[in-house]
Length: 104
Image 1: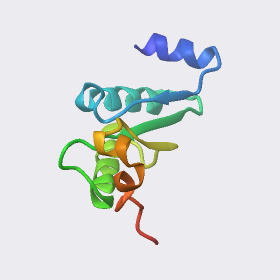
Image 2: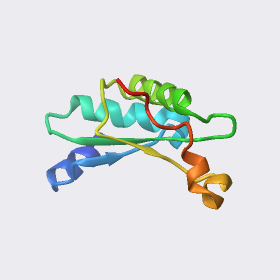
Image 3: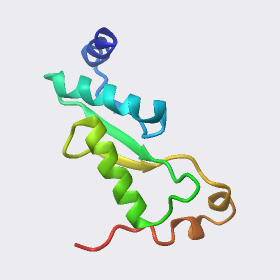
């Protein structure tokens, strides 16, 4: 994997995308390790999975904390919502209720 990562960076790729559900966290660990050992300035994106029973802003913040720990990073460049739920397809507004980050 190191060779593939380095070849990708050498070819000009800089965005590496993963998610907490890819390999149930293993992908984030691999991507984070590769990013940390690289001298290149790479962009890391990961995703929160709103699985059954995991809704609301607190769950999203907890998901991000878990992703950061697995990645071994203090921040990610892009944090996204992964997988649309049935409820989201029917009513995007209801899906996002309670999912805004609290004001600082």
